[in-house]
Image 1: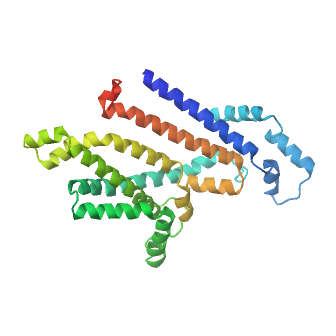
Image 2: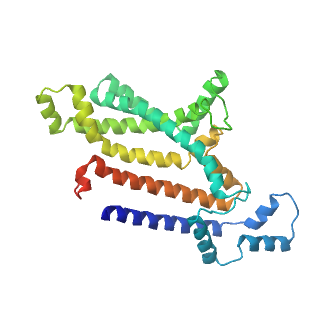
Image 3: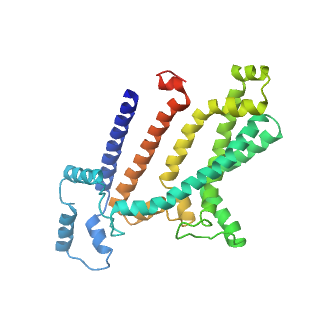
Length: 312
C-alpha cells in the first residue's frame, strides 16, 4: 500500500509540473488570444472590444491568478472554451478521443498478431533463414518513416486498388484498416526484436535445461515456462506504446485524415487555440502517468518478488 501511495504522489507532482509548464509556455507565446478570437469572425474590431474580450476571458489578470483559475476549472472538468471550435475543450477532446481509442486498440491487436509469432519464430530458429528474414523485416520496418508507409498504403490500396477509403471523416471499419496497419508495422518492427531478445535470454536459463531434462516438449516449455517469465519487459514496452497511441498519433491521423485527438491537436496549434493546446498536453500527461502507474503496479502481479519489495 505504501508503494502505491508513493507512486500516486509522484503522479500528482508530475501532473502539477506539466500543467504549470504548459500554461507558462502558452502564456508567454506571441499573439493575443482575445484578438485571434475576434479576428476569427472576420470582422473589424476596436481596441475597446479587444480589451472587453480580454477581461471576459480573464486575460487581464496576473499570471498566477490565471493559472490558479485554470487549475480549479481542470479539477472540476472545465478546461475552458476552445477559441476555434467555440465549444468546451473537454468536449472537443472527447470527440477526438473516440477515434484515437479505436485506432489504438486495433493497432495494438494487429501488432501483437504480427510481432509475437514472428519474434518467437526468430528466437527459436536463431542464426537460420527464418531468423535472418525476421531481422531484415524488422530493420526495414524501423528504418521507414510512418508517414511514408502510410502514403504508400494510400497509393496502393486506396488509389490504385480502391480497397479502402483514402480519407475518413468518421470512424469506420474500412477506414481504420490502413492507419492501423501502418502503425502496426512500425511498432511490430521494434516488438519483434524485443521478443526475440527476451526469448533468447530465457532459452539459456537453467530452468529451461531442467525442463528439457524432465522430458517436457519444446512447445510446453515455450508457452508455459518461457513466456510467463518473458512477459515483464514486454509489458513495459506495451504500456509505452499504448500511451503513445492514446496521446494521438498526429502524423498518421493527418495522413489518413483520421478524426482523432492528434489531428485535433495539430489544428489547434495552427489556429493558436491555446485552451485546446493546454488541454491536449495535460491530457497526454495524464494518460502517460496513469499507464506508467498501471504498468508499475502490474509488475507485482507477474513477479511476486517485486510485490514483496524484492528485485527481479
